[in-house]
Length: 283
Image (cartoon, rainbow, N blue to C red; front, side, top):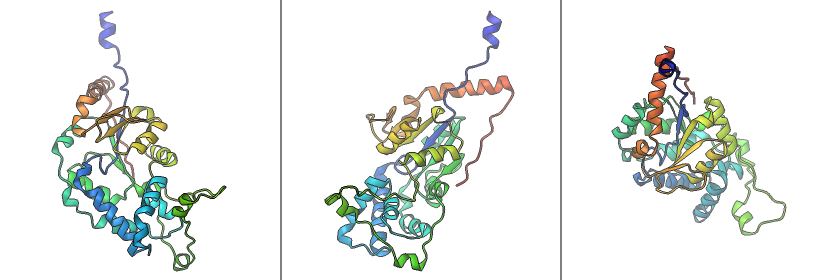
């Protein structure tokens, strides 16, 4: 019996992937990046799309609330613009110097021999810049970003001239029976379709994955597709959150099983004589 116990194969670890949101998750909201991004989006709406400045605040809030991102909402209601131009305007002028290196979290990530991926609504250029500022650019297997889920889009001059804009502000001010919100061509969190597509592309089993997010609605969407969820930046769990962490620096205290499973994984590799291979994710 002792020999059977000694040579019994270790149990398969419960988790095999950690999926992280980027903005306001890997670095704090207090950095000011989110506020700067919001200002740039509003400036884009005025300068590039010709929307009256007095309407920007209400419009952008409705678009963000109903479509996940202001960009997705703008496309839904009929505005046509080049995606790369939008991202260059919104992210290209951000004060990246406000994002500080995080050697503590880097050490935490490197101590876990498990797949680690980024899942962000932002574009790849922004994601890479932010990760480099954090000193985490080599800690992740891949980045699931805007380009991963969406095809490039650039309107023709003719299409710009015939834009038919849906009045979403008026729609909510005086709803008309039978009139529904238009759908967006942009895939992004918290859309269930976007979540499922991202998991499929990256070959992620949601039941064996922990999802770290600062957005409560993205957390809820993550839970709906089967992910274990960690709400970051909050001390109390909300609907859909399995855990809540004020800081990712506390991950070891909140999820000690990850380190226990790391030991199991090493034992499995030792017994099998195999080394786990990672699969890259293109964006």
